[in-house]
Length: 138
Ligand SMILES: [Zn+2]
Image (cartoon, rainbow, N blue to C red; front, side, top):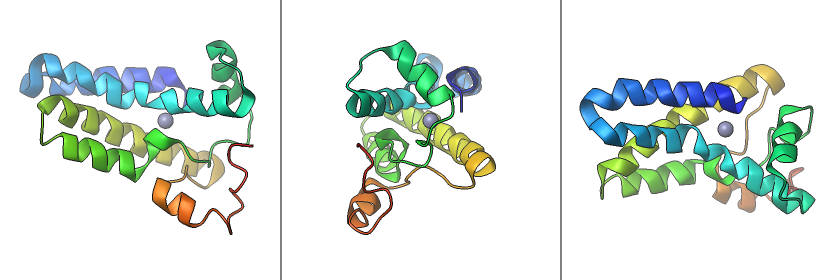
C-alpha cells in the first residue's frame, strides 16, 4: 500500500484517538506510517543502496517483494509493542497504529496478490530451510 494512504490513515487515527490520549495520539503516526521503514531496511540490505527515493519507487513499482518478511509487519512486533504498552500509553497508541497498518496491508496484499507478508519472524526462520522464501535477502 502506498505511503500516502498510510499517512492519511495515521492522521485519521490520531484524530480519533485525540479525545482519549491527547498529544500522545500523534504516536499513532509512528505505528501506522513509520512502520514501513522496514521496507527501506530491506531495500538497503538487498541492493546495498541507501537512496530513499529509489527505495520508494522500487516498492511502488512492480516487484516480487510483497509477500516477503518485513520485520515491523509481524506478530512479534505487535507483541513487543503490546508488552511495552504496559509501561507507557505512548506505546499503546503506537501499537494501535501498527495494528491498523498491518490489517490494512493484509487486506491490500490479499486483494492484490492473494497472499500476505510473512506474519511471523519466528515462523519464517523455522520454515526457512524448506521454504521458497529462502533467498529473502538475496
Ligand atoms: Zn506496510
